[in-house]
Amino acid sequence: MRIESNLKWHILLILALFISLMPIVFAVSTSFKELSEAYSNVLGIIPDKPTLSNYLRIFQELPLNKITFNTLVVAATVTIFKVITSVMAAYAFVYFDFKGKNLLYFILISTIFIPFTMTMIPNYLIISQIGLRNNIMGVILPQLSDATGIFLIRQAMRSIPMPLIEAARLEAAGNFQIMANIVLPLVKPAVISTGIMFFINSWNEYVWPVLILKDTTNYTLPLALQLFVSSEGGTDFCLAMAVSVVTMIIPLGLYLIFQKYIINTFTSSGVKG
Amino acid sequence: MKKKFGNKDVWIAYGLILPALLVFAIFMFYPFFYTVYLSFFDWNMIKPVKEFIGLANYKALFADPLMPLVIKNTVEYILILLVLNCVAPYVLAFVLSFVIKRGRGFYKGAFFLPSVISLVVGSILYLWVLNPVSGPAAILAEFLGINIPIWSKTQGLVIVVLSIITTWKIFGYNFIVIFGGVSGVPQEIIEAAKIDNVPLYKIFFDIVLPMSSATGVYIFIMTIVQGLQYVFTPVKVVTQGGPDNASSNIIYNIYQEGFVFYHTGYASAMSIVAMVLFIVLLVIEFRYVEKGIYYEN
Image 1: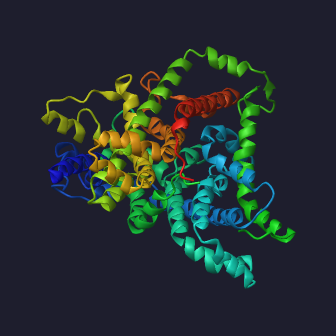
Image 2: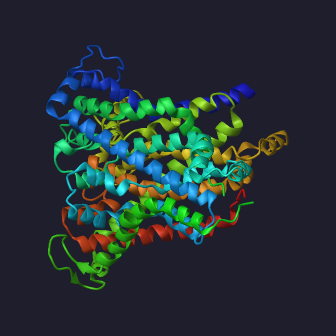
Image 3: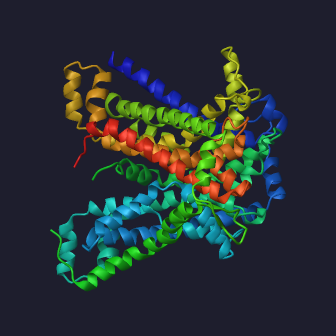
């Protein structure tokens, strides 16, 4: 009886998973189909006549190497800066006592809740004024720090036993040594997963780049993808799916490699003091 | 426990925070207040002079015949989103924590997976999957004798589809975080209740929900924040606000006013109204939920 009732739940979970993962399977499958087969053999996962022509065509029709490179530069730069500024700030919030600490922390964390629309027009004006519109630097600049990172890394640092740090201080270790030799190795999983999430989110970012970037050669992958969709109908889904696969392959790969770290960090990131 | 620090240490602390603070000051706090400032002006981003018009933008906004529809669409979207991304993952997290033991790691990993994929990709995937004529969902539904309506031309249904697309993106993250909160409820309490033959739904409502409500509230807020942020992408990629503004919502409208029609002041005023709306939602939520919250610390 026990097993039977569990089976019911497993079926429910599998069904939910099926709904959320099947679109990805269809996308990969369609990207290897010819256009005619995409419409005649919709449900077939393995194409009858697999073809690479969609991939060849998207690289011909678009400067996709340049676009992928742009995406990589944006995501890598944003990630490096976000991680460094988050680790620094988190360290200060955990291991120092100073005036206005709680207020400052509260102000920084509150930025998580500021809607994007409250900042987009002035930021657009700033980036235009300093001549970085239509330039990936203009995409990068407003994203150099992130309150979520400060929050997650601070959580991780707080779980390090304080006596460990005190002991190091007694042995006259400097802040830099404590950070590099004690704190960083212990918060490595949190730093890695936060970094991976920053990278993935920046890789996927659409709203801000679409305001800033105008020329196709300066595009990032999500913007290029949108070129293949026509709301009037007539979208070539085979090409669109091929670009989709190119866009999602790096985030998916990173996720599969670092899955354990990421899941653990977010599982323990709930509201705990 | 903590040691007192000298002056020098304090300056190190400020120095460590400075880079993050600088970025936030320039690209968060200054823009925030500048948006408030701009909402009192008539401007188009290009004219050298901004004309002060007081509250005229706000008055125009409340007189805008499109506004009630836009706000209705936004609220509808958020309500669907909350059901799909707070209620559903809560139930699944409960089941996974206390009812079944096997496959926990697998389910967590698999449910989170779509969260790492671009929403533009998600929009295109669902445009294909939910295509009423040739999409896989339509063909599967045909076996069951169901026709998928032409949602892109149907008021109401468009919002459901938009919600599905953003849910696909948000669900996994919410699920993981809620799972963390739910599995923080001591196993012994659940076991004791099970031995007393307390039905599962009662365990859920009377024990698990109150004891994990701090996480629940966090996820509730984040769903609204993220949901409003994310919805822009599928609207822009899939519907452009159509048909007849049936899928337009306040976020997309701000974008259109600001970056298509160049009504900079008007768009700023609308941003502020959107934020106030959002804060009101939160306050309502807290008035009703806050009393029952159980904080771990």
